[in-house]
Length: 393
Image (cartoon, rainbow, N blue to C red):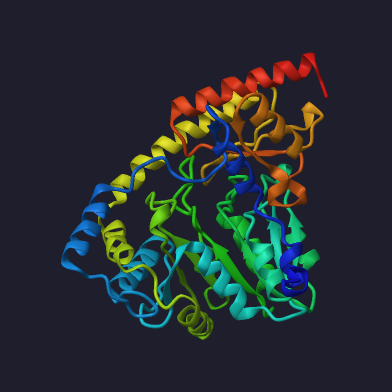
């Protein structure tokens, strides 16, 4: 078999996830401290697990409606009304998906044709650009800067818009930087978008995780933005339900209708037991969420202080559960820093370059880990930096 002829060039050219690369390396090193993956170390709230057990005992394991259990769609609709102040019909404006990742995939595939451009603020999560490329579109990066607190500015957005622009990805709170868009920032973005035919895919998977007393604001809640925004969220991060594989999207019915067709053919329906359990998560687990966020906030402050104290400038994240320290002072590239750190000191972090070229010179460190885990990792990184000073590359 000539596999080179069988496999499309665009698939062969696609690079593996830089996140998974260092996670996989860590799996083969004994005694490694992994700070590389954004997976909560908390257990899924007991009320959610108990409901799943109950559903299994009752044998409720058949397919649901393609768009998801109506009970869950109603719960999602109620949640969005209360949390972001936007109303969506559970009948035809909400889809329950296999994680937020499927929702991102569906939104891009439903809208992008060959030649279309999709604007992607970077650094940002790794999946956006590959999905756009798969559809024959072009992902156009918009570089965000630390001096702007890694927020997307109206000026940088306006510069990148062309007649071929179809979608703006809006990934806030941001992975990997922890940046958050405040209402004033979003109003400026909305001013640029009004009067265009550009759709916004607003990835709000970390929306519950904001700090310093500031609450998340969704672009969809601003005047004239609901009609052009697909809101994406899920249960993995907020409710520590990563393995349950459940997310959701909400948006204008004409777009959601097309996304649902793709979902029908590719997925059929999301996991049934997870859907029943997710109703309980939305309706009964806010206290669990608040407890986890308080813990993340403490860890966030621990890491920011730790990196700044050891001489690595660290932007203070306002959301999500990552810090993004600058390692340019070491003289190493992001990839070199991470490779030497994992092999020399058995600490796994992710190179900033995995999140776009503008991430070069930074590394992503997750604080979805215990305090002891984080303190051990910081101590080893401090040792690594001291040894670098004594024996630079």
